[in-house]
Image (cartoon, rainbow, N blue to C red; front, side):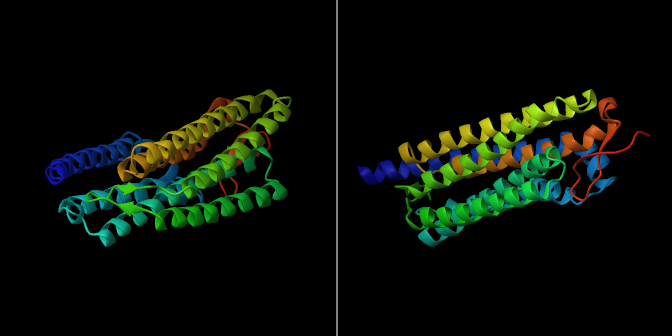
Length: 280
């Protein structure tokens, strides 16, 4: 009886996973299509070093989604799935998740660096935090990965407490970035009015991102412990959202060049950050 029930659940779980994966891929592609005019104008026609973060987030994000669809369509469609196939798939998605998260965090650091007028001390501190969080993510991810067992459809069971430590380190990083942004906002808004809109944009974006990342982790980590470690839930959809968010953050900064209130502010440094220049 148990065997018959499992046989029925396997195709159902596979169907849900495929539909979810295709939906996540479609969302990333759709955002790329609707943002193409901005991408052509601000990324391809006006290249800068920060464009590589954009291109990585956009096109690596699409490639990662395509690779996942191919994987779940061929190797993962025959049940029961071999354990080595599950581990390969899970590891690839986990590292893709970490890469997407690091790209987003790099953009956030550049924005804070801009607020602090390219302070080398702030740059050194935030860059150190970025690398620390990356290495902690890899360490906690690998430890959590090593403790997983997979069922017949490659959903992982009994997640490790290292997943909680990963969430705590990531949340701490984003809270620090948010605190830096808020602190500088209170000081900078006392300066000339032309900077107000730029500072407000960076502050509001930073607050929403901090809240969004923390909320995402507070959903997917308990989900993994209470329900199951389903890759399309804990990795694919967050990867899709982070890819889109990173690209939109880069475009929003590039668009400031054309705004009237930033005619005396321009994103022209080696990292495409806000920098005061003389009146034209």
